[in-house]
Length: 263
Image 1 (cartoon, rainbow, N blue to C red):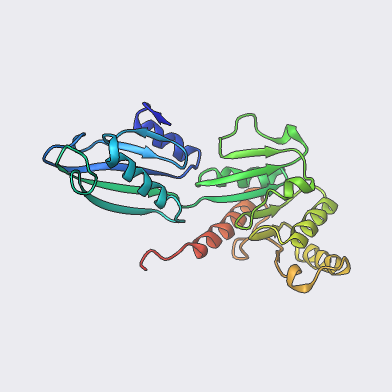
Image 2 (image 1 turned 45 degrees about the horizontal axis):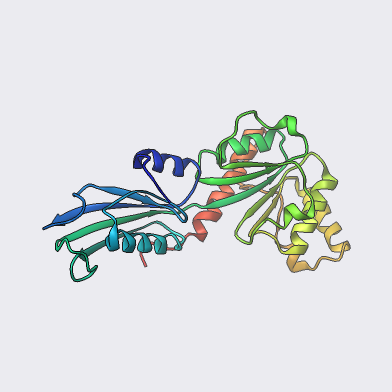
């Protein structure tokens, strides 16, 4: 589906929504071609905006763009196409197009709890290209206006936990220690999420690990629990200090998981 919306607004909207896309630019035209240099179009997984001239040229560009969207990091690809021999179009000229993909940092965080630390952490995460699922039964704690990248959930049942994918990161910081334990136990039992962090002291961490072992969890599952969550080098008990510590640990995790661009 193609839209006539200007590409600059499209890119801004996709960036705000943390949706991956490819920007296609006609860099150079030699001879007869359907569009002039500087023409742009935007391609997402499901939609396109604008046009670089239609026909097989555009079809091939869209196909290449969607190939780039399957990769987990940003790329640039320069492609020169002869309209007559490569694409069987009657124009007869040559077109050089640049495809720029923007897919990086498609990180997803599940945040259980909406207290002071969680609210401070959300403030930080919303400055990053991160999608956040925020979970708490106390609807009155959520702010009235939320970005599109922040999704609210009011229930913590098993069906909700089943939505957490292997590459998602989970932070548990509710107001209830028993709820914390139930969530952590379910997450570790199911092998859910890439990272499972729990707020608390060393004492809480020790007690939770003992309880998890008593509940029958194997040691390799218990070892996945990161508690206390956050960077040890960032100390302090103010909500924002704790939030900065947790955010720093997540950012470090994401950077370590990022593939090398020098390869």
